[in-house]
Length: 590
Image (cartoon, rainbow, N blue to C red; front, side, top):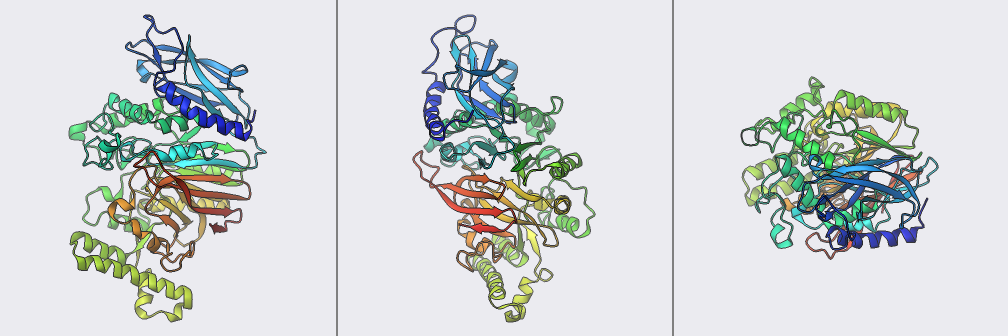
């Protein structure tokens, strides 16, 4: 069943307000309850996720007020808002062992169809949700919203609210759904939390089972997040902050064994609670760390959701305390290939990914990925000036950074306008990768794992697939080419801005965008490769928001949607840049 567009949007708008009332406990069924008649509360609404052609995961949180009894639930999926035509039903239980969350895999559904769903226990009824299955093979267009990095204490989730009204039919979240930090105002993103009424809970950093559950509950109390969960199915992966900052298999930058215990224990707790609170289908009940999986959106695209954080990531090069920040280790791996075993994901997952792309018959192969995959390489001349200014922050050293940037961009602009012969010897040296090498600025991203990235890209190149990555983590909006070490373009990358987490602007670098993507050299010159980063075509270093993607067999269009504020619930959403990739991999900007 496909609901007419206007009625669907009317339902979504009404659902957002009704869900808030229901979740607040002021509109509940009249009678019933536990053994002592206690009120049954659905304080965190309902959600759906991991849609397939014939099924979808349904989620809720149900608890009797004041008692710990288990809650027996019946889920109902219907083709109408009155639930007169129920097409799937079954049982679920919310109890203490699951933190009173409940999930069910509703089966027997029809591809490309939209449904209402709810949970019932006696006379108690949950808020109503709206979901849909994956489209049938003859679908002509798919629209979905992409999110990452949602720090509760930094501001309001206005991007979630904007997405509810966007016409998107699916939500993809690429990680950092929560953050592990405590409520200390000096901690990352907490400076306005008290003023905004966005103080996180619990007050300390989350480590225990109760800590993680309480943190998810605080995030899920947000009305915009509840509304978005209730209006479309989500497809999610975790990144580091669902565990701890800059995590890898055996540890994390923000984990202290002496005060927080074994990393393996904390990691297991974090994975358990993630599965409790997210509408995700368990891939392996014996291994909750295995969350990589794929979704076929008709013949248009296959979405491969990977885990580049927990499943198989080796320790980052910059996490060893080297005086050079790990760059020597990185350079050794890149130039010699002797560290080919240094991985973002296991060999098993890598094989799963590339074999899945080879087997897919869809037009596009899209990878949902936590970290920036493109080569974000900066010229050493700029990095050296920046390092000096950081070590000795004088006015003269700050000016030297600007001079280094200007000299490099001028050389690039001169070559583009008049050719190599117009360059001075100094400019030729600046543009030479021998005399002025390029180095990455973030070794926690794919740049820190160059050999495995190269292997994957070379495999995709050989397959001839139309390859796109969707990436998060960076808190800013990026569009880049994906190139091999030899410079061959294999695909493109859309990386959306964060929902609330501070980006470059928080470090005083909000004005850097035009130097990074080259629009300082040529106004509107997106995709000309005239910036500090050769493969970067567009970047926004100031605004928060999300990515709205529309995919057809002919093109994939990404709209970088930004909100004008996260410090007020009154906001305006606008499209900052639209990037369209055609089936022949040509790119246009609007």
